[in-house]
Amino acid sequence: MTKEEIAISIDPIYPGVYAPTTKPTKLIFKNGTIKVGYFEFTNSSTKLESENKFTFVEFVNALKFRETNEERYISIISGNDLTNVEYPAKEINQNEQIFVIDNTAKSIEESDESNVPIIVPFDPNLIRIRRDPYTLGELIDRVVHQEINFFTGFQRKQNLWSSKQQCGLIESILLRLPLPAFYFDESEDDKWQVIDGLQRTSAIRNFVVDKTLVLQNLEFLGQFNDKSYDQLPRELHRRIKTTPLTVYVVEKGTPDEVKFNIFKRVNTGGLVLTPQEIRHALNQGVPADFVAKLAQEESFIEATCELISPDRMEDRDFVTRFVSFYLTPYQEYEPDLDTFMTKGMKAIKTKTTVESRHIIKSDFIKAMNTAITIFGNDAFRKRKNKEDRRKPLNKALFETFSVAFSHLNEGETGKLIQQSDILKEKFVIINNDTRFEYSLSSGTGQKESVQIRFGEIQRIINETIFN
Image (cartoon, rainbow, N blue to C red; front, side):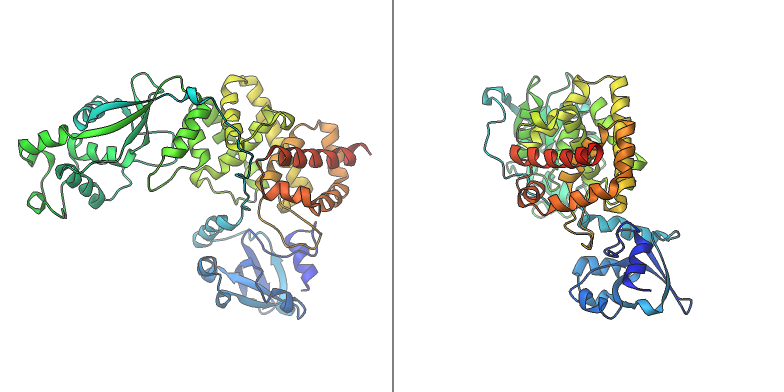
């Protein structure tokens, strides 16, 4: 098989592009041998292509290659030995599927959303945080009466600390060492939501309230090893409960965009929250559920080649971008992007109804299907020429194309699909424009960048349909 024949087996739309493949690829050899893995570009790929040879990562070496990027894990495949390439491979085992998930890290292009002119995003007078004089005993009392929400909307879990870490915290308390500050949100009348300090609060609950933690491997107070809370002397009970705490409470009525910035600044745990995880926590209920359901749509998963992991809510970040620009036209965008998306999630609750959310869902699915039909597995990726190697998913392109496609009527969608070759030619041209390229990669949150990329994509779509 030639390079062109392999490429056509993978994607007939781009007969000159065979790699990198993003789904399991099955190679069938003339001698009956079968190999499954991924075509992958390396420094030697171009030279090998002139000899009709290709670089391929077999599943047995896939994880090691991703971790090290060392070419010793690459197999050299001769096209002369192949009879067929099956893409995607129809049958893969569980071990092979694991690599499909691990492949996600390199499948989304990194972009700089921070290069935005400094604009005060809110009135500083709206920051409402009080510092309460608190003792550990008072915090324990809240835990006992279930007035602290351990099941927050964050993409993180309680009880992530090991037993050793938890015991270390308890020993610090017994030694009268000061504890880091705790941050809570009093959005609910009867419960505080943990902003920062979830693992510490969980450890204290496990030892004092649930009594499931037994002290082990204490560094300085070894005499209390193998002791539960009830087995400690009364004096230490009193020491625990009178331990002073620094507690900050974000008061009710604080605007969501203010909370978003507070959450970003004070979250200091071992698993620092992503912006989307914070948005999810601030918009529990209808907004969070709606975004989560859109992220589970088969058309979205297919359009993004099953490459966006739900871990850390990356898939919901993509969806939130769509919803935000769908509800607020790009012409009305004001930096920064994080704040804009936080308001976008809030708008799901304040500006939509059950009926309008059904329309948004239908338009989202229509946009994903349109992208699949026109671009196949090259959707939402940069392309500077037809022979380019397939690029990672680009969030800025996802925003622009998904929103633009969602607003087309049935006739316009049909004509765009019929003229898809023209659209793709125009897309290649604008990808070679420096300003457009900048709007996709650097300073993507700048107002000018948003205007450029949305305006250019809308222009080539209109020219394709109406000219």
